[in-house]
Amino acid sequence: MRLRKALPVVAALPALLLISACSGDSDETAEKKASPTTKSSPTSAAEKAEAEAKRIGAMDPASLEKSTISGKNAGFEFKKVSEADALAGQDMEADKAECQPIASLAGGYTHIKAVSVEHRSLQPSEAKNATIGSMWLASHSEENAERVMTDLRTSLKKCAKGFKTLGLTYKDVKQLKDPSLGDDAVGYRITNVVNKQSVTMTYTIVRKGGVIAAFYGLNMLTPEKSAIPEATIKAQLEKLD
Image 1 (spheres, rainbow, N blue to C red):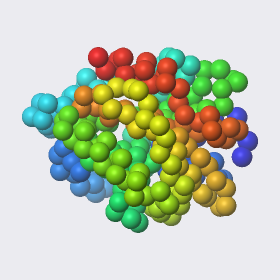
Image 2: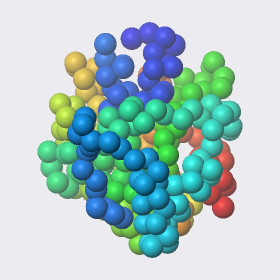
Image 3: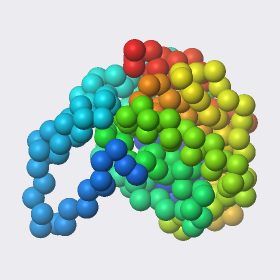
Image 4: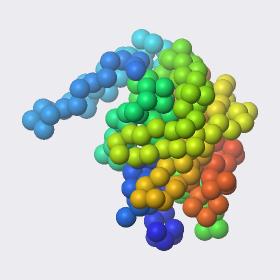
């Protein structure tokens, strides 16, 4: 894969689609996927999410979108990910139950369904920066956000050897030193294997109040430098104040 040619595609997608590009719960009950003949009602869905956010004390969808960076900031360009691309990773189910929190994050979601989620791709502003990735913000009640972090830490301890999901193999799950970010933060590195090619990604998961801010980075040239910089993460966290 030619790195520069792949950058625009790779950076725009959640981890599930990112691997494909390189190679060739609930605050409310999960809604059933609409059939092709079912008429959707965006307005009623938004109203339902807003009412649920108010009920549990979570950030409502409009406020979450307003608090999510778009455009150039802190060394990256934050681009809104299309709904179709974001939804592609929503149903990543691990073959081991204890690995589900990690598998859900690999798909761009938390294992506990959020009231609303905002996805952004992260593309470096400078050509010399080879780290690309994604960010998503998930709005929860503070209680559920705390549970997301607790379950993730448990999963990292029990799932070190990795897991499989949707035909993808993840291995070598390694917890890193907890970053000093937000109200709570966890860092870890994970390797995905596709067609005998290993791709290492670094995740930084931060809780600020009831919002989970998840970041993952990929650097095909220097995997150990794949973490999204803390300055970039802090820029987003400041928007949540």
